[in-house]
Image (cartoon, rainbow, N blue to C red; front, side):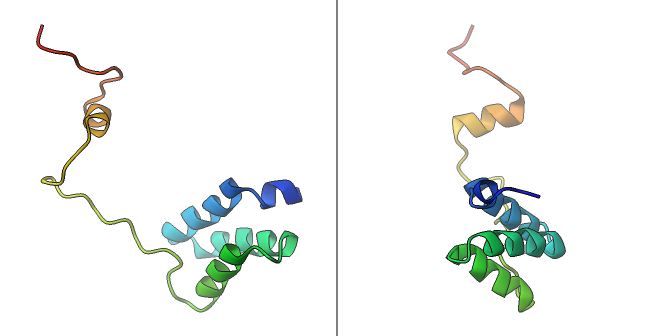
Length: 90
């Protein structure tokens, strides 16, 4: 069982959000119930749990990025598998 410190962490709440976003609502609800039990004043967890219990999606899906959307150099490097900045022509 997770400690109250872990249940009160940003990472634990993010785990529940990730589960909800992936459609794994049972897992999200389980994590959220544990968070709320340990920290009843945790408003965001309570709201997400209420949304999941009500049958509505807790988090809207991520908007897909079109191929014509602006891309940062870091994103471009990640896609191309470049681990260091590209400098000038050699």
